[in-house]
Length: 312
Image 1 (tube, helix red, strand yellow):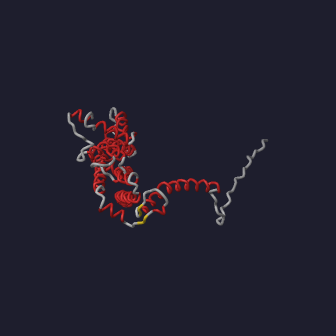
Image 2 (cartoon, one colour):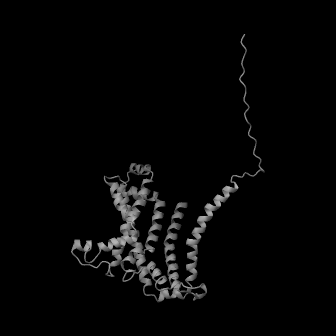
Image 3 (cartoon, helix red, strand yellow):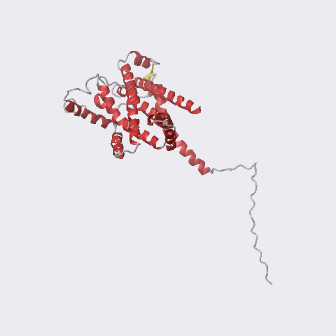
C-alpha cells in the first residue's frame, strides 16, 4: 500500500488595496534638489548671457553713453537714437538693403543648392562619401578663415579667378560687385552646412513613402516635392531659422574684407563700429534692437504658419 504524497501549497501574497487618501511620493528630496539644479543653472546662465544683455540693449537704446564710467552718466534722450538711425545715418539703409540681399541670396540660391547636393548624395552614387567630405570641409572653417581664403582667390593681382580668366577685376574693392563676391564666399560654407542637414533629413524619411509614390506612378521630381520634402518639415523649419540668423549676423567675412565699408555695410558691422571705436553704446544698442526685430519677423511668421498647418 503506497501513501499518497500531497504537494505543499505555497501562499500567494495578496496585494493590499491602495489607500486613496495616501499620497504617493515618487520623488525624494534629493531628486527635487537635483532637478532644481538641472533646470535652475541653465536658466540662470541663459538669463545672464542672453536675456540680461537683450533687455540692457533695449534700455540703453534710449540713452547716450560712451560705455565708460558709472551708469549715472547715461543721458536719457528718448527715441533720439532711433530717429538718427532712420533719418540721419547714411549707412543704415544701405546696410538694411545689403542684409536683405544677403538673406535672399542664402534663402533662394545657397540653401536650395545645399538641398540639391543632399538629394544627389543621398542616392549612394560612387564616391558620394568622398564628395560629402569635400562639401562639408568649409563648414569646419571659421568665417574669418573663409574670408582670408577667398581674399586670395579674388585677389586682383595674383588671385585664382583673375589668373584663370586673364582679367584684372578688383572683386572686393569695387563697391558694385564686392557684395556679390562676399556672398559667394559665404555661400561656400553655407551650402555644405545645409547639405549635411538635408542629408540627415533624407535618411530619416520612411522608405515606404517613396515606394507608395512609385506605385502610384509619381516621377522622382513629384515624389520629392510632394512626398519627401513635406515629410522633412522639422528640418525645413531648422534651415529657415538658420538661414535668417546667418544672413542677419553676417560680420566676419565683410570685416576681414574692408571692415564693412565701401559697399559692404551691414547692420552687424555698424553695431561693432559704433559700440567700439565710436564709443556710442546707446546708438549701437538702437541698431541691435532694430536687427533683433528684423530677425524675429520672418522667423515668427514662418513658425506661426508652420504650426497652423500642423494643427490642421
